[in-house]
Image (cartoon, rainbow, N blue to C red; front, side, top):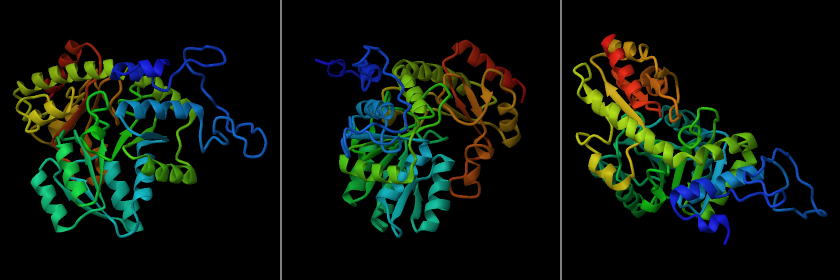
Length: 386
């Protein structure tokens, strides 16, 4: 029995899937394959199926094997960025005239890609609150979309969608159901097991986990769809490089333990903020007061490391974001270090003036794995500066 065959639990798969020791040297950590081209045994005689770096790379294959195992997918593909993966999926699955039903709380870059890049190509877009399945059902009944796209938990308001219920509604209308699992990661949630067709990741975030690599990934329930997307990936060239693939693979090996710490720290920070008189609202699915708490407890194995809070006004929100010390003011999320973000002017600036606009009073925290006492002290001193 191989190491991969013996690894069945999630934590074991995170360490071993796609990571068999090197057959030539016995190296426990597989080498990083940087070659752009591969010797052939006669014309068309490929060794291991590799011919050119854009079409395939052993280090990239190892990462894709790892992600497919963790998401429970038939196949996975890795990309140069999360948006590169989204673009490949959309172009492979849609044609001009098709419509995407999009959640009303998503990463600004996803909306920008759909509205300003795919829109002129002819893809239509409608927005609905995905946490309200009655609203989703009404939208689908009004006009069946070709694709339903949701983030759960969503960015940055942490809305929770019933993936199983959404998949039933989407599939009944013949739609492809896509779930962005970036905030939860497969350590906390596996959408394919709940009926989703495709899972999207910004691997830059929790999969990589150390703020040192930009990447994206797609996991598929159907290998046929994966093959269509892979052709577009090959034709357009949006592949992850070997060093990026290696860094992501290395990060994934500690994903399970990191997500436990992210979640416990975020829970403590959220509970502390909830009791603070200068905080109007705390958005975190681990709080019993969160409208999606019970659903999140059923379909997730933890509540994640993102906490959003609402302050009295835009000035207070900006002041808070600029006053933290341990939380670094920066774009992105999901690294071991804690970050603070002001979505209206940063990650979600592209949705200003749209129905996806984030209130100016919102601040998003990506809670890292530092000592929780230090994190709580930092938000306290930032609130005291208001």
